[in-house]
Length: 480
Ligand code: NAD
Image (cartoon, rainbow, N blue to C red; front, top):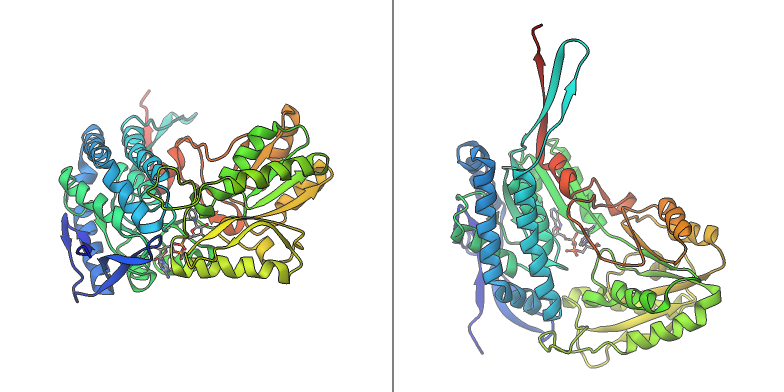
């Protein structure tokens, strides 16, 4: 067996083990083997990482650098990521069984996160407010300070860079704590940041579990902003902890996305996106279209096609180019998703296709469920796996009420060829993003975030600027 790789912390530009030498095992969920070890961050390691970021902010060049210079440094990092794109994708695929082509796509999006936010801060404009009193006020956006970023395992590199890139673009310094399930690609990102010449302490990586590594970061009063992506339950703990020192939080949390297919939808398009929305990344997507509502008039035809498309997905080794669908990311997550699938018949539901793999793999096949009461846990809780619950509906009013009947409000999709209906329904859906006749399309200038249990705040473009800076009003007298 080949030697295990090691992923340390990256603190002050150096990769280091934990102070006490503790490590944890890193699994490959497809082979069900340990392939690496990572440093287990303690409170002392979190302290080191925050001290490094604090020093880099208070004394280092990064927040004081010309905007174009900072943008150039971020672009150097993006270029290095592009050169190492297949290595980064290899780490995510090995670490969580994401099909390799999807991991490559995530890396490209991660590179773009750095390029976009580098240019966005370099080229930004402020506001001027002419005043009748003979003054004018202008706004200035200064860096906020030290940012603690905590990310999940479903898009290991992409979710981390979505936070780190705007944070450092605006002159902050940061500590990113990736999920304990997927430390690999973010550690390589930390190594590349040092190679790209980012000053020490600007981008620190702290590996380890939610507690103590993550919780030590959120509770540290030297941290000025906390940006978190993960489950709603952890989001509550993160917000409570950050409130002890009044650090603003941005929370991107769970979802239970509604996907609505109207009678006049282009069925080929709707089936294609319904499959992508719930089975891409084995359904481990906060934005998954996990509640599907199909108009009665097309229900039978749509369902025949949807089930056939789900059954046609090639399941297998995530490195095989033919594979479209693979294992879940960990044993623990497999147990969680399986228990929801097992609950379906007990709650009166029907599994039309899919179910738990019977070959001992950590795999749940693309699963489509009908006839569940709206109170069943599999219907209303976030499963975060490849399980789609389907309902039929008669009219627009009914389906809007059904779609909005959830604690979550991250996103929704609707499929219709009727322009007025598209606008009308989109504006009534309680969700941070509504996709019409498409899914998963993002422009980084737009607001991203959720309503209710799906989150607090928005990130993207100027929304990220609001969060990662301290806007200042400068009031000028004009002598006449
Ligand atoms: P999780 O909440 O278990 O963990 C997320 C991160 O928080 C991990 O790094 C974990 O170590 C850390 N953490 C755990 N406890 C902590 C604590 N007390 N203090 C500080 N940090 C702590 O979530 P997960 O299982 O990794 O990810 C899946 C969840 O993430 C799903 O609910 C999914 O919907 C959500 N998610 C949301 C978005 C979004 O943009 N809204 C995107 C991706 C995933």
